[in-house]
Image (tube, rainbow, N blue to C red; front, side, top):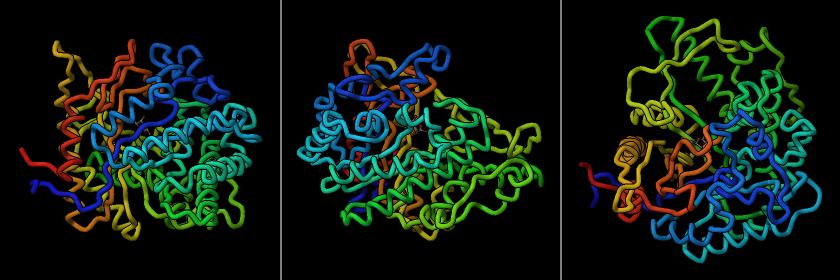
Length: 449
Ligand code: FCB
């Protein structure tokens, strides 16, 4: 029996996203997505990289499923490229697009791996962006239509669905910070985009329920614990705001049916809030089966009135960093999970992403000894296990990522995989962390060292 043991039937998986791995960006009738569009604008992505080929998973999925099988994955989380299915975002479906996901789903099932599908991992069809993207309320209806089509095609075979990946990123970071596609810097628009994203989530959940499928459906939020930089009142208040701005603004509507009052009040005097139509909040808070959490790092918060709109800044505190300059603090995952359990009624939680970027080197034996990534996973899994022991309903864990891939604005410069990709030859090599993770899955836990 391993020292650190997980509950029976714990969901062990690895995650990816369509734009980050598939490539084949204009093949078999696929339409352009906002990430195809954005990444081709010079200067937006490190080294002007793009996802035209990425890991070439579209052509190499058979090899990739074999790797998953070798790793012993129980689940594989991937996302569907909306513009592969509906090149214009709506209208008639592209048969070749859905065929790809059917082939992938079948192959996974044949190999005993359960598919966990994310409907939206940021690659909106560019044609819908021309109509205002998530700033346009109609996009929520188009999303519902797209979701309905996918449920009809795959609903019978897929046990786990995630409507959206990190709406905080696809609204605030994409429409206000401008670092992600479509690259806007308009805060009221970002709040509108957020409202429509959440609305589309609720519509898809309602639709899924009405179709009577037996799988589970939820949403994935990027959630991180926030700690004040000092004991001062100002920093403590700023920390509550940071939590409101990044965490509660997304979790509260979905799980409590309302935007957090302190933040609504804060924004009222500073910006324009989105229009909320009657019934919206009920739709958004349609009960879900689990809350997906993407968690990577802690945040340390300092009051800073120069930062609009929420008047806070983030500090590094000297903890070790990953290659993203994200602090490594496994205890933060314990704090986060216990807090979510407490504040959101013991809802079932699933870690849908956790992992670390480091510089990897292929050694002379052709191996990648990524002890730093292994240590990261070891530390975080230990703390998550501690949360389970303390009563948190954590049902699963997906490592980010199955393989090195296109890391958005950073292009190919940040490697998160437990499988190494040589981006010249597209050769795959299971890293040391991958072999370690395979053993964790096999033993449903691990020994302390
Ligand atoms: C998350 C994204 C995922 C990946 C990791 C590192 O925010 O969901 O696609 O980029 O960060």
